[in-house]
Image 1 (spheres, rainbow, N blue to C red):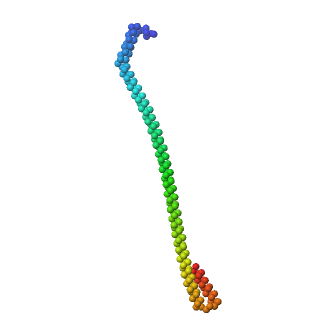
Image 2 (cartoon, rainbow, N blue to C red):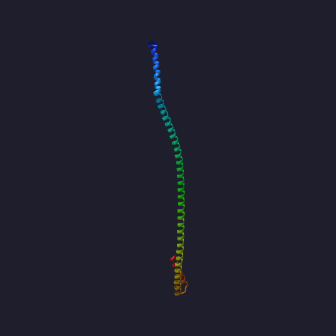
Image 3 (spheres, rainbow, N blue to C red):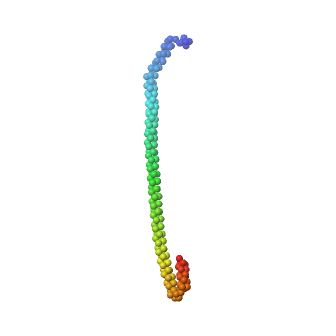
Length: 165
């Protein structure tokens, strides 16, 4: 109130007119520029926010796409592992079958060899028995036919047969 007492009415009116004149001049020269700057800034901010939202949406889309691809790759890897295990099992089974067939061939060959060896041994034994029989017959023919000589010859013959076994 004291301030109002110091100022006169004409000064107050002059100040109000100056203020209104200043507002009018500012509005004519600067107001449009200020509004234009504010609008440009608002536009930049909104376009930046829109760009950020678009980037977020793109990131989410890419993330979903990568997750889908990753799960697809994992499924493919699982399938390949299953196939490799299955193939390995088949190879193992083939190796087992081949080894079993080879073992059977070896056993069969051994049986055949054994039969040949037994036949050869029988043939050799037969030849030896014939030779011994021939010797015994010769001994009998040359010796007297007494009971004592017969027992001795037969005993010798049996000893020789035992020795050849």
